[in-house]
Image (cartoon, rainbow, N blue to C red; front, side):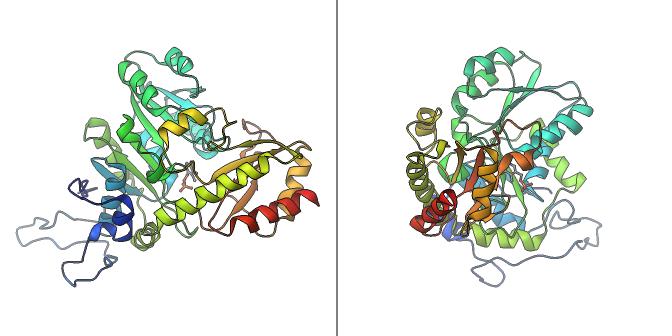
Length: 387
Ligand SMILES: *Cc1c(COP(=O)(O)O)cnc(C)c1O
């Protein structure tokens, strides 16, 4: 019984309360305010050979996932959420649910590891994938093939240039063509954007990032707007191919999620401040951040994002690649590491990790803004820039 947690749509409280109290769930057996971790891999059959709880074997599902899935589902206002062993496991399950020959649109600017996987494995297995500039609605319209395009994959803000795609408008175009829309909403978090409310069919999160927030769990999630044949196939990918998370990680993820609203609020606040300050600097070519008036996607972001523009921004330096790598080398508070969405701020010269096919300029530094003191973060970046 893979993914048994339905949206608790009767939950009457805000996202902050849902998160802090993990939907107010109390363990029925012990009255514990934190749910137990179930480590069992296998479950007893009844004397009549049936499985009384519906549970058989933990490669398909684990009771520790339930409170996590229920909470994510509530935040996204979906029909059902499924936890996966990583963000990539969640994302690739969506594509594995398709069939050879199916036509797919994906963004030109997107999470590099998924783009690589689409270009190699997914293409080899017969998916017909086109990469489109999703910030241009007429381009999306042009590439949709009536009845043939099965999926439009979006990522907004799109890593690492933070391009904004208009979820509601693209959903309308895609649905007219008979395609479903899936949104990688990792960087928007469930707090700043709710894609299902805007028409999306599936939402994906790398729970490794803001959901957990402490850089100590790898996990992913999918949320479906409804139950249909496509979602059934995606569920089978997790259950049959075993793309599952460890129960310990699921428990740690739930602990992380309980403070997500505080962390995300602080990261947005810090990122907005740092983006505005760095935009003024004479060594800076450009700051890419959806919260800046100067940013191309700002108007759509203002409509689509609620309560902040996220904790991710990129800075391009006039002096080019070597200077950018030098800045990352000299920061002290900003840690030189990949990943994002943790409480600690990270800095990365992004082009060098993405390789030659990247759309990322080589003068670009990607900043994941954490929850430290914003002035200290700015000062540290400025001393690295000036040295
Ligand atoms: C990290 C990330 C992923 C992949 O998630 P993992 O948990 O690392 O597998 C996918 N999309 C985005 C936007 C990400 O930042």
